Amino acid sequence: MSAPAVHQAASLLLYYPDQEWPRRLELIAERLRTVRHPAARPLLRFCERAAPIPVLEAAAHYTDVFDRTHRRTLHLTYYTDGDTRRRGGALAALREVYRAAGWEPDPAELPDYLPLVLEFAARCPRAGNKLLRGHRAAVELLRLALEDRGTHYAEVLDAVSATLPGPRPADRAAARRLARTGPPSEHVGLEPFAARPPS
Image 1: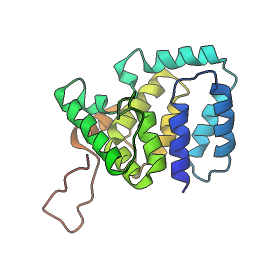
Image 2 (image 1 turned 30 degrees about the vertical axis):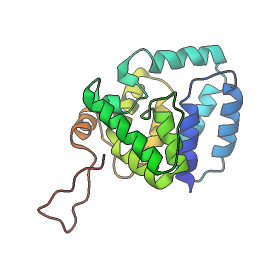
Image 3 (image 1 turned 90 degrees about the vertical axis):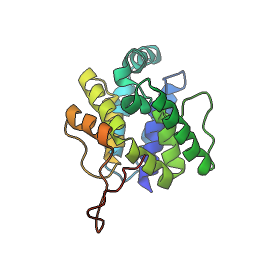
Image 4 (image 1 turned 135 degrees about the vertical axis):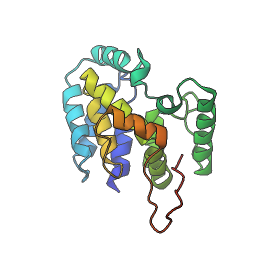
């Protein structure tokens, strides 16, 4: 069960760097060294790059990367629904998924907050993986935006993407197409009926 460990580590690394940040990095790196999953490698690289950065500088970088533009928001439904009424329905659906699994996330955060979704995937792998697959387009759009920004946080999204099945979109246009149509689904034995993409 190495993917849940990757999801938990990625979740912790995507929270705001506070005074406990250096110790958090140390503990995560120590745990990741025992994880046998290719996605652990980019997370370890992130920890190594982040470790020497002073906490105040790390916090300022985090704010600059995630809080100053919607292009790099950690709120997944923004990539597919934007600021529309439809997004309210998507957020309510996420809350229902959490409740159905018996998990109550931090009410101070919106349910589409990526660190929260990753924690859910770590605690409830079956339901959590399905949720991540359903938001693959958002993960990929954020990953590409972080790569464009040139931040080491791109390695955290590389790790998350590596835990998802199938090839990842090659570029932003492919990720946007995925956002419009939903993740690919198998139709074996169902032709000519198309399965509805998971939400």
